Length: 224
Image (tube, rainbow, N blue to C red):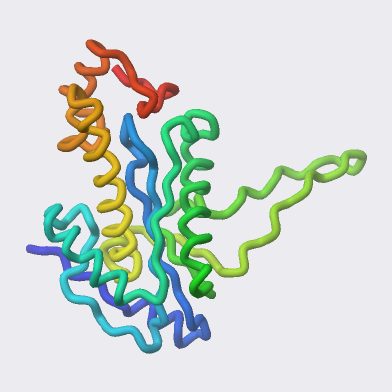
C-alpha cells in the first residue's frame, strides 16, 4: 500500500495555537562519504496555505518529479532556501555541528523574507539549536551563550512523510544537493557521483581505494 501523502494538518494545528508562520526543515547527505550535508527550509503561513499535490518525502519521488516540483514549492512557500556545509567543514566540526551550520545558512536566507514562529525538524534530534553548555562550578565563569533562537523548535519523527512543509523542504534539499554531486561527477567520473550521490556503494568505495580520496570526501570517515 502506498504511503499517505503529507498534509498540513499539524501545521494548521500550530496556527490554531498562535504560530502564524511555520517552517519545515529537513536535511540530506548525512550518511554520504562525499559532498556536503544540505538543509532545506520551507516557510509557510498554514492558516492560509493550501495543500500542494504531488509533494512527498524526496526519497519517494523519482529525480525528474523532484526537479519538476521545485518551482511549484518555491511559488507555494512564503520563503525557502537550501544551505550546505562542505566535506571539509564536516571533518573540522563534526556532523551535528555541520548540520547546524548548513541549517543556519538556510534559515538566514529564508528569514530575510519572513521569520517563522515555529520550526519543525524531521527526526528525533535537534541539530539546529546550539547545544546547552554543561554546568560549571561556582568558581568558574560560565562561557558566553549564543542568544536563543527567536522561534520554537520541535522534532517530529517521519515529519518528511506527514508534514507537507517538511516534505517540501526535503525535496528542495535533495534536488540542490544532487545538482552539486552531478556537477562534481564531471570532474571526478571514477567515483560515480552522478548515480550514487556520494553514498558508500561498493563501486564508490572501490574507486576510493584505487584513486584515493578527493577534497570532496569526508576524510575523517571510514571511506574504504
